[in-house]
Length: 238
Image (cartoon, rainbow, N blue to C red; front, side, top):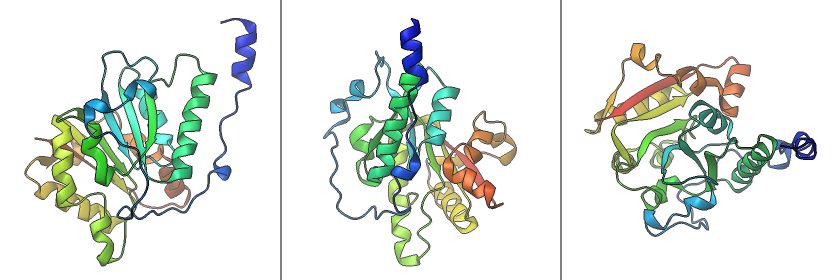
């Protein structure tokens, strides 16, 4: 890389979240306008990953927020392709712009992460083949406190069957929340599903991602600033 290229790279600015603010909650049941493939083989992954080659996306961060954990995921597993899926327009725009800026500032890096705006509750099987994914992440999902809205929660019996379909045997689901009731809800429903088994906490703590799950995301950092509790669980696809 010559001096001119280095100078340009040093002056690439990362996007500022204050220009991408959006309300924290989005109705996943409402009709939004999304582009999505009719079949997984029609997914245009090559447009998102410059050097995808023969690789497939293996990690999915569902509701990736502002992308803090997604970036950490890409740094931790440079050979793996990870996708962030976010329903909010401005938030997903921020993550896309953030990744673009990171790629410009660090030539050859961050080409293994990408973000798309979509509703994972509706279209996950449109993007992924059976048993394609190795890891699924649900970090600080919307708790939808009202009982009438529990059906909107990203972890529910119907969706768990879809997660079991796209997740390979031996793959893992990771959940983190600062809401104890939601933690108990997610653990209960995942453990009741015949395709999943919870890892003992002692084993979960040994996972390379365990410390990163709690604080890499912007939401996790906010919980830390507010001295809030965090509840983590990891489940294996049987």
